[in-house]
Every structure is written in structure tokens, then in C-alpha cells.
Image (cartoon, rainbow, N blue to C red; front, side, top):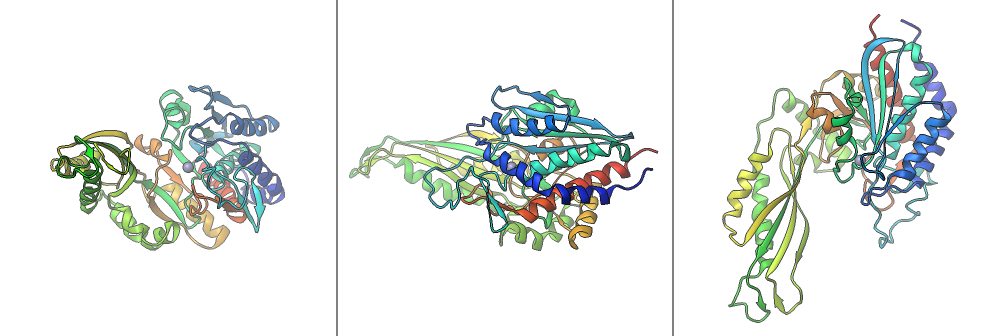
Length: 420
Ligand SMILES: [Zn+2]
């Protein structure tokens, strides 16, 4: 085996830190809100860098305004195939929200933080993937196997034109292991995630003049009662597979610290959010129609069928309501004690003196797509607290820490799986 280049990689990151921050700011300034999901400007910032670094890549655009970037390189010997994955679309900005203290597309730096939509979810993580890829390219003789970079579109809406398309049409992106920089908090490595199950309920009654309450049921009142009745789904218990119970129990403190007090209670339970209610035309009319959109989050160990059985029991008491499924992705997980988890823990311990805890994420990421195919996929990224909110930001030191951790962990993974 050739000499260990860990010190060289660290030195490059220290020396080139300003360029890396400059790239992240430019990436943030290139607007890529989803919806509508047009990521061409942000993708051009990424390909511009790859061009300057002479790193060949391919663009796969099943939707013309949602390009996906793929680049691969081989090490000096045979080994395993590591895939780096991040998305380039971001949440939209509510233009009426006056609480932003910076222009959401500025990438302004203040008090050691960068502010912008996407500054947490997940342009810092995607930038970490890009520089991990670029830095390991410089020392290809010092590791074995293959490294693939995937920068994808259409993640924020669970859309079909990004990673989902690549999984089905570009086998190059599959690999042996995936590293992703979605927000996780530096204190945790995410080895699994809950799955969304989205339902739309339509309630119809005759409707009437607002004073004639004796003549008809109200669709909005039924919706309110139904929403409360559906809370009973959240009381269900599910058996946990194999070694997950142990890992989940051990993650209690880390989960609450990373995602806020009370988060742990949601890891193993179904949660319910009534995301939208639309009903009624006028204050003095009894609504004859109401539509409600429900966002269940299904824990690991549960299935859509288990949840729907209970939902249908509740629905039986509401004959005016009809149900339609409008979105679903099953929960997914990788081995909480897998090789990449240990590598990340060792790496972060060396860099910062603590070992990140393996946890299950409440929200969804593209990492699930690899987990569905039994390819281990892990998420290690910055603090998630400002995700999707006003004044979204990343602490600069956290960004550099994530970049460093990804670079060194990827290098270590490829090196320890090199065939001599
Ligand atoms: Zn994300």
C-alpha cells in the first residue's frame, strides 16, 4: 500500500478553505427552489467547477430543466465503489416572510455563518461531496476501487427526475456504499429514516345556509372530527427488526440534541400532520365540501398496510369521507453498526474528539433509494435546525468540518477496501 495521504488531504482543505467557501456562496446564489425545481443555474455552478478542475462528467436530464450530474473515477487498484450523493434543488422561499434578516439568495456571511435558502438543506453537504471527489481525484494512486459523484435534482418533492431516475437507468450510481451530506448535526450519523405516507380526504355533505344547521352536516366540522380521530393511528406499536431496537434506544439523547427536545418520541411512532385543510366558501354558508391533506410518517418496522388497516377502521365512522393516497415512500435503514458508521465515528473522533451517534431520521432523503436496494447509505451533515425556515444558515466551521469528515472518511473507506 502507498503512503497514507490523510495529512495531505487535511492540508489541502486548510489551504483552499476560502475557495471552498467561495464556491458554496456562488452555489447558494444560483437559485434552485423546488417547486418549480429548475436547477440549471445551480447545476452550471457545479459543472463550471468540474470543468476548471478537468474532471469529466455526464449530464442526465430526463426533465430538461432538472439536470443530474454524474462523474466517476477509478483508483490505482481494485476495491469497492463508493458513491457520493447530494441534491442541488432547495425548498422555495416564502416571499411574504419578512423575518429573513438577509436576502435568501445572497449567501451573506455574518458572525461565522452563511445565510441563504439551501445553506442548511443541503448545498453545504453537496459541496462537501464535490470537494471530496475533487480532492481524492488528486491522489488516485493512493486508494483503490471507484468513486462516483452524483449531484441530483428533484429531491425536495420526492420527484421522479432526480436520484429515482438515476437508480433505474444509470447503474453506475449504485455502488457498494453511499455517503450523503444532508443535515444530520455533526453529533449524529443517520443510518435510516421514517417514510412519508400522504393521504387526501374529501368530505362531501349537502351544504346549506349558515343558519340552517338542522338541515345538513358540515363538511369542515366532519374534517375536524376526522383529523382528531386519526390521531389514534399514532398510538400503534410496531416490533423492531434485529439489532435496531438496541441502536434506537442508545440514540435517545443524541436524537433530542440533534433534532430538538421530544424528537426521540417520534422515532418509533407514527406521527400525523394535517398539512392542508380547504373547505367552505363564505362565513354564513355551511360547507358542503372539504379537502384535507394528511402527512403520516411511518416508522421503521411498520408498513403502509399496517397503517392503512387502522386508518380504514377510523374512516368507517365517517361515511361522508373518501380517501386517496397521494404519496408514499417506505421507511428504510442500513446497518446501524456498518463499516461506514465506524469510519465516520473514528474520523470525527480524531478531528473533534467525539463519536457521532447512529440515529434514525424523522424526515426523508434520497439515501432511502439505495437502502431499498440493500446498498448501505449514511447521512452525515450540518445542524438541521434552520432547515426550510427563515434565516436558513450553516455555521462555517460546521461546513468545513463536514467537508473534512467526508473527504477523510471516503478516503479511509476506499483505502481499507483496496485489494493488494
Ligand atoms: Zn435535503
